[in-house]
Length: 310
Image 1 (cartoon, rainbow, N blue to C red):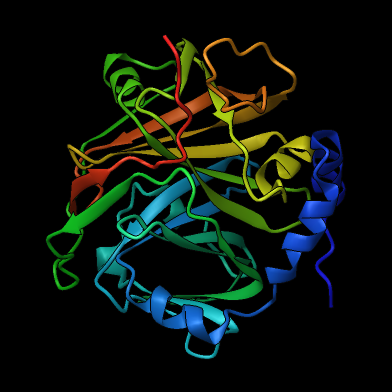
Image 2 (spheres, rainbow, N blue to C red):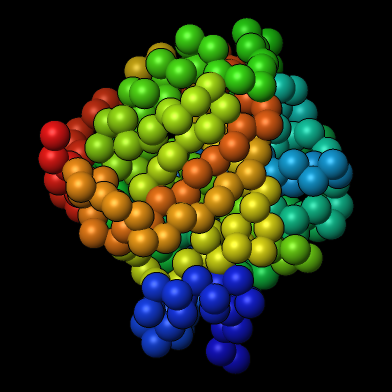
């Protein structure tokens, strides 16, 4: 059965003039993980997540574990092995995660620029595992991923150590500096009553612009034309971001609301020619020290990053 885009996705595709391309590309979307993608998922040490709290806030996060902590043995669900003692209590993923909760997952291998997306709902939670039943699954293109190689290993036998956590509403000096140095973010979004999406955005260092202590601006580049994230935001602006600090092992989580801007002046070429930006209004942020569990070696920047002029 052909995948049916929701109203928001169709509206954004039409506005961008890419509806026909989107329909063609949607042929890769299924309700199972294809056999060839299951070994890829099982060797991953990191997955990006999207969840929504009972208050309606959307949060993005990153989970880490040894190869094999993520599995899709039959292709109908995703199993996340994480003993309760290893779950970091300050991680938004573990807060208010209940049976039936929507969850978005993005399996991404930064060193090879491969990624695979799964949207679904939680069908089992216990002290050792979470199982997410799959509603939608599909590969994503390799564009705008900065290559990094994980170093070290996650110790699944040791209990999670309490992290130093900072919270706020307006960005402080430390969180602002992290944003200014970032070349990678992950965004969580969802349409009303629909699945949550976890997606990746990357660009040149500094591609996230701080307009104020509570508002950010991010360019939107050309992609696969399906506009899953922007389509969600067209119907429900609530979303969450997580920005990794690869050098220091920190994660900056932000929750808030986004607004899509079309046909913007772009004399520096920040959008790579699309003229699209989205602005993010921060409602709350969380900065978690020592949250990444791995260190990372930078390999190279994406060749697809736009060439920004001074």
